[in-house]
Image (cartoon, rainbow, N blue to C red):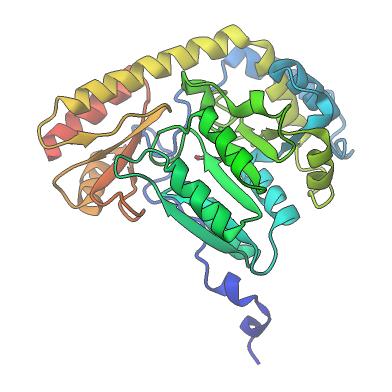
Length: 357
Ligand SMILES: Cc1ncc(COP(=O)(O)O)c(C=O)c1O
């Protein structure tokens, strides 16, 4: 008997998470993971390293990171009982699914969207109900409601602004979906800091089935340290805490997140810079012949070319420009995704792209 017979059939059918391209190295223009182009400034790193030196590394952190939760409560103006922090928002997606999805549980996800959700539903043997985005890649609110009324999913997952498409669902539409269904609604706001549209957070007070998920990986530039959190009413958080992996946020990452929330001006300046660079990329791509670029409320853009995406991706990579080939997502044939880097990185990307079109 092979060990494989003891592995769940649904897990055997999955693929391991992988990011195509090169690992970070000098000279690489890395615009493929929607990261912040700016590292934490050296003076803050030094201060935090000093603090960390005096902590006891042999002791467990708090089961759930109390100081971080308090700081998050101030930062978000949300009651501390309604906040859960995790090892990146990826961990928290799994936390929500652990509480809601079992064999055959229906989960509605507009498509295309962040692929990890679909994968995680499969891990728990749930059933994904895909509702295609509108042709212009906006959210199909009426069709989401129709499908939810018919299929009664336990969970509806709305990534807003969405990855990889970049567009948002209006909070009025989130509220319509909540009102028309009895599903738990998860709104993943990983990119909300780059958006001018309002967050769904204001709906939490009225809706005990709403969860808003956020991350420190994008606007706060902490992708390497893994901190995410979600906001909901306290009663829902209590249920999500039950299956949650304890000690998931390490002391160091919690301290860095707390420190950065105190450096609001620095973070806001960086967000403003990234938004300007995203606009610069948008206008520059629009001006290139043969390119169709889509609007985006995030720090990244998707664009369609006449070329086969895999080949163009490789040609750019050959010149040390790393973007994301998103052409295997439904509706995104011949598309690539690029995130805003520094002005210099964006200018190089545009020059290399132009040469290879
Ligand atoms: C929509 C969305 N949610 C969540 C994440 C993951 O965030 P984290 O680094 O907090 O796990 C990403 C990362 O690319 C994302 O695009």
